[in-house]
Structures are given as structure tokens and as C-alpha cells.
Amino acid sequence: MSEKSPKGSYFLGKRLNKFFSGLESAYRFVLKFFKEVWFPPYEFREFIRQCYQIGYNSLPLISLTGFIVGIVFTNQSRPSLTEFGAASWLPALISIAVVRAMGPLVTALIAAGKVGSSIGAEIGSMKVTEQIDAMEVSATNPFKFLVVSRVLASTLMIPVLVMYTDFVALMGSFLSVNKNELVSLSTFFVQVFDALTFLDIISSLLKSLVFGFTIGIVGCYKGYNSTKGTEGVGKAANAAVVMAMFLIFIEELLSLQITNYFRQM
Amino acid sequence: MRDKVVEIRNLTKSFGELDVLMGVDLDLYNGENLAVLGKSGSGKSVLIKIMVGLLSQDEGSCRVLGKEVVDLNAKQLNALRLKIGFSFQASALYDSMTVKENLEFPLVRNVKGVTAPEKKRLVEEVLDGVGLLKTLNQMPSELSGGQRKRIGIARTLILKPEIMLYDEPTAGLDPITCVEINNLINQVNQEYRTSSIIITHDLTCAKTTGDRVAILLDGKFSAQGKFEDVFSLPDERIKSFYDYNFINI
Image 1 (cartoon, rainbow over the protein chains, first blue to last red):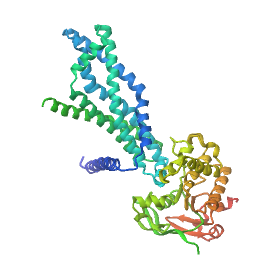
Image 2 (cartoon, rainbow over the protein chains, first blue to last red):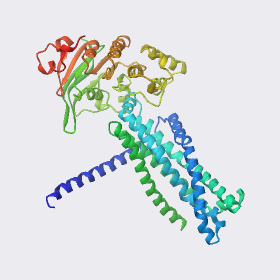
Image 3 (cartoon, rainbow over the protein chains, first blue to last red):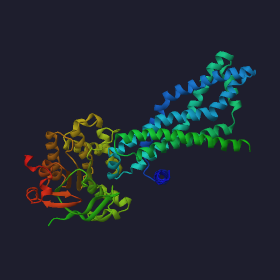
Image 4 (tube, rainbow over the protein chains, first blue to last red):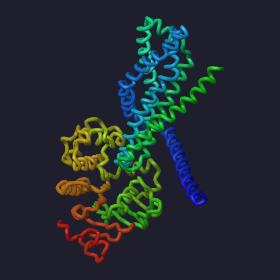
């Protein structure tokens, strides 16, 4: 035991060193983003292209997922509410669940998988094939062109996708409620908006902005720092998804605490 | 004596414990083609990356067009980079853009007030110069290795550089395409009046394109001069660099 201990502490020290140097490198990357984002040249065309890629190209997947979430959550909640004679509260329950938590969370997790991995893989492959170096030697700031445009597009488009997911999930829920409780569309949406507060909507949008920023910056960071070779590109894409999902759950927990604080004020 | 466009003195570069360049001295004269020969991993690419500020040296001096690269700020470095064309080993064409967009990329970012017809004319001119005008709207993934190399060279020529740096221009190409690329390097040197450094381990390429060759061995230039002079030196390391007798130029 005593013989193994120095070796163990050596590896522990090495891992801690790797962890903290990774943390420092990520911190510098985020800091660089906030330094670069304010100053020209602004890569407007690339930003629009990324908004299209992240926003429009995610619509089919988001539509399907949001719709299914709405139907499934309604059908799963109905028996419990019916048991207490509170089936008429379904629209209110669904609206609160979807707008406060499920809409942002489901959208962010899907975007982390689809958008985060795509950004990580694209920038990673550009790194290993020297395309980023080629941009640099042609006097273009690759950080601005690749990172700033993608992070801004992701930060802007995720809240838009969240609003869309909320709507689609509520429509899915309406179909179920309409079929089983014979509630009309107008009555359904009156109940939905009655249950929601301004704080619910604002907190949902603000945390979606944070989720969007996280997905973009993590994807870019992992891609930009991918090691040489195709294996590195795969690892960058995978790490972008895993790290973004991990951070999204932590941010969801923090946002819940902050929102509850304001709700109790 | 012609002017020096690149002047390197006592340049050293290490990666961790690995010493790659150990006191390199090199001059490139105006209008000359210099072929730098060396084994894989000998630091040839590192040398030209230091010249464009992609890497920085540990010690020594690297002056390009009279400017010490390491002392330049971002704006000055970009101004210098516009005078240098860099042809990457794997061409480094932007995968998400067409050939036309690849060629326009450095132009629209660095030349202010260029009109659409002027842009079209410049793109077609350089593309025609490398004999690939018909690939204008193709994606890089649709091109062969040789075509990608040519487009990569065309992309650097659009800004009319004073110095061309070629990183392994013939690596991974068939012998016929290698000859075409070698001819293109000479053609660029004559038409655009560039001074060039050709990094290679291909002796045919070095002999065909280089006015002078320099051999990088063990982190230093062990010989510089005319191809025939260098390979007639009684240095076993140079003789064993490749089995010279098998080369039939």
C-alpha cells in the first residue's frame, strides 16, 4: 500500500492538473468570445447562415419531439388528476410544466445533440485539415468567423426554438384534451394563459438564452481544441454533446433556484 | 546581389522536450525558388509556419519582407500575411464553400470596394491560370487531390502575393499530377514574379522547381546551394537522405 501511494498521488496530481488547466483554457476561450463579439468586422452573412442551420434545420426534429412530449405528458398526467376529480386542471398543469421546464429542457437537450455535435465536428475537422490556419494566413480572424457567429446564432435561435416547442407541445396536449375532455381550442388556451405568469415566460426565455450560449460555446470550444486526426474530430463532437448536456442540467437547477427566489418575493 | 525577402538567423523551436529547429539560418532572395528538403518531422513545415506567424520561435530572428514577424501586432501581421501566399499540404479548402466562394473568401475580406464584375474577373483569371475554370461552382469534395492543390494555390494567388510558401505541394499525388504541380509552381514564379519556398521531401519536385535547395537535417540546414552541388557533397547524411541513384530525373 505504501509503495503504491506515491504513484497514486502522482496520477491524481496529473489528473487534477489536467482538470484545472482545462478549466483555465475554457475560461480564456469564453473571455475571448466576450472580447471579440463587440468589435468589427461583424460576420453578418455567416451569422445568418448559422441561424438558418441551427434554427430552420432543427424544426422537423423539434416539431416531432415537442408534439409527442405534449401528448405523452397529458396522457400520463390524466389518470392522477382524474383520481382527484381535477381533470379540468390539465391545461393549466401542462402549460406550467411545458413553459417552465419541459419546453426549454427538451429543446436544449435535442439542440445539444444535433447542433452541439455538428458545431464540434465541423470546427474540429476544420482544425485538423488546417482550414482554420488557412483563414488565419489569409488575414481573417477565424475566431470571429467561426466561433462568434455560431455562438451568437445558437444563443439567439434556441429561445426561438423553445417558443416553437412550447407551442407545438401545447397543440399536442390540446389534441389529447380535446378528444378526452371535449375542451375547445379557445377554452384550452384561456386556461393555459391563466395559469402562466410573466415570470414564467421571462425566466423560460432567459434560461433558453443561457442554454443556447452553452451549446454554442461548448461545441466551438471542443472543436477548436480538438487534437489532430479524425479520432480527435469524433471525440470533439462527442465531448461537445456530453459537456453541453451536463451544463444544461446544472443551469436548469440554478435557474429553478433563482426563479423560485423571485417567485417568493 | 538581389534583395533578401526572408532572412532567418539562429532560429530555434521546441515542442516540449522535442527540439525541432536548433539554430536555423536561411535567406530567400527576391524572385528565387528555394526548395527545402528534409525527412518527415524534421521541422520544415514548422519553419514556414513561423514565417507567417502561425507559430512563434523560441529564440532567434525571422525577418520577412524586412519585418521581424514576432514583433508585429495583429494588424501589422495581417498586412504582412496578405503579401504571403501559403499553400497547405492538404490544400485546406473550405469544405462548406464552393470553389468560387473559396477564391472570393480572401478577396472580399481584404480588398475594400471590389465590385462584383471585378470579383468575377479576378476569380476567373486565377482559376484559368491553374487550368480549372470549369470547376467554378463545384464543392471541394467533388475535386481530385491534384485539383484541390491547384485551387489552393489559386486561392493564394488572388491577392497577388510577393512570397509563396508551398507545404509539400506534391505529397500524395500521382507522378503525372506531380509534374503538373511542379510546372505550375514554376509558372507562378514567372508570371507573378514571386519568391517561393517549396517544402518537400520529393527530390524530383526539389530539382524541377528549386533554383536552390537547402537540406534540413537534425534541426539545422546541413547544406544549401544548387541541387547538383548539394548532392555531390561528401556528407553521408545527405547521401543517405534518399537513395539518390534511384532518382531518374
